[in-house]
Length: 176
Image (cartoon, rainbow, N blue to C red; front, top):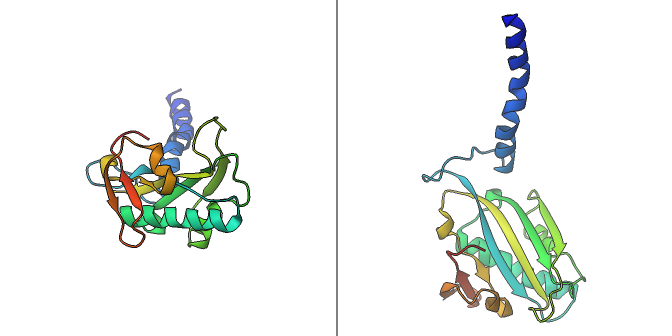
């Protein structure tokens, strides 16, 4: 009788490991550890605006945004687990994720979505949520808001210009 019980537990063991394997896959094959200075998965928010609904305007603005996020957080493409891009309903000329692909994020899972069209809200806006594997704490993550999108987070403290664009970069320690 006990042999049957052990066979049942033994056959369930691989299923018990599935959550651990999923975490490892989400971490790009690296181990995800506690927040004691080891690698964990964090989110970085960012947004920018475009002047017109053209492929070139969307790609240029998105590339600027992604470059700023990378520079402000010292990221390498292998640190990026995934990125979710959104656009307001008035932008449909190009997928913003195409800009990240052009920049070399060829192995990073990327998705595009359309935001809810809330009347009176910021128009022609591209937003991103980048998931990164990092040893930094959440309050060390630098969230980047460029151009008119700075108005999305007026509560942000520590505005600072970046080295190559002199566009404002917002650093937030508040939930996104």
